[in-house]
Amino acid sequence: MLLKQADGTCGWLVAEAAAALSAAGVANPRRQARRLVSGALAVPPPDLFGYPERALDEQQIGRVRALLHRMVAGEPLSRIFERREFWGLEFSLSADTLDPRPETETVIEAVLRREPDRSAARRVLDLGTGTGCLLLALLAELPAASGIGIDIAEGAVRTAARNAVDLGLAGSARFFAGDWASAVSGKFDVILANPPYIASDALALLPREVACHDPWRALDGGEDGLRSHRAVAEAASRLLSPDGIFATEIGVGQEDAVAAIMKANNLIVDCIERDFAGIARCVVARPALQGRRSQKKVGMRCGPV
Ligand SMILES: C[S@@+](CC[C@H](N)C(=O)[O-])C[C@H]1O[C@@H](n2cnc3c(N)ncnc32)[C@H](O)[C@@H]1O
Image 1 (tube, rainbow, N blue to C red):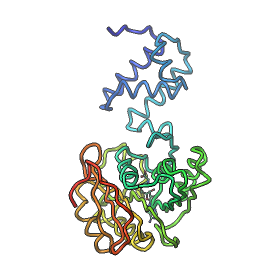
Image 2 (cartoon, rainbow, N blue to C red):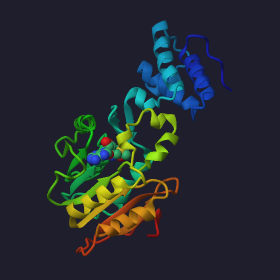
Image 3 (tube, rainbow, N blue to C red):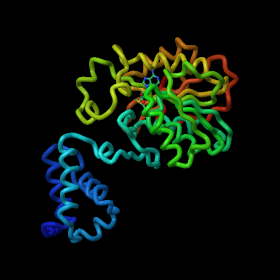
Image 4 (spheres, rainbow, N blue to C red):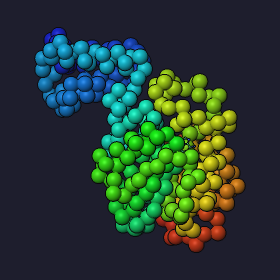
């Protein structure tokens, strides 16, 4: 049985916030309300659940209500606190970075499933790095690997570099501003990308928490949504080592078009990986005519190519 908490307590404020979020159509309002109150008051969630009778002062209530107002207006919690968890790691966000999405973890899973030796000194390139989430998540799993992340947004490059420091990965990751890989040379064992892939016309249809808070440069894939897929595939074709793999995220329904782009760039599609919702989400490709490194058996969520 849920007991009504006295006015001015933590439990009462969570209930008030949950009711406001529910009325605003926010999904999981009670969970979101707990995270809001916990973050705003810097109280760990277990303390919030364990002591709902904790009394709050006017200043604390005012702080929560100010943030609640922003959430009700459509701002995601991750943007309010400028933090997002990805692959079990904490990332800072900034105005220049995409808010990393859980389905993007499919790219990391796809690469790790094909990595026969987690202690190998792989060279990794991440195109359109944003917060650096793809590169840093992979480096966290491959301790001897090192990598470069590139983004056209200088603010994103600064945020990614700060995330590398915060995650203790600054020794193995470097970040640069650039137009895809135009200034990059050499060969890489793994190339990662999550390019902007929304067709320009469809940007107006995005939910407001995306349209108003993610940078358009992270979303806009040009007239057909494929402009950046072409650019990163061309770069991968030039920069992949003979045994290397290229793993790139795709938008809903883009698998055939992206497979054709790979083929046009002399890349062979190895597999199309599905995310936790069963949506084709990541294309994995290799250079044509390569001396293949032993391939691991692909997983259950791998679809036909
Ligand atoms: C969909 S976001 C992905 C960010 C991050 N990798 C992630 O998965 O959360 C695409 C990123 O590509 C960057 N970008 C867009 N055009 C670019 C270009 N021409 N060269 C390099 N980066 C670009 C954007 O600034 C954005 O950070």
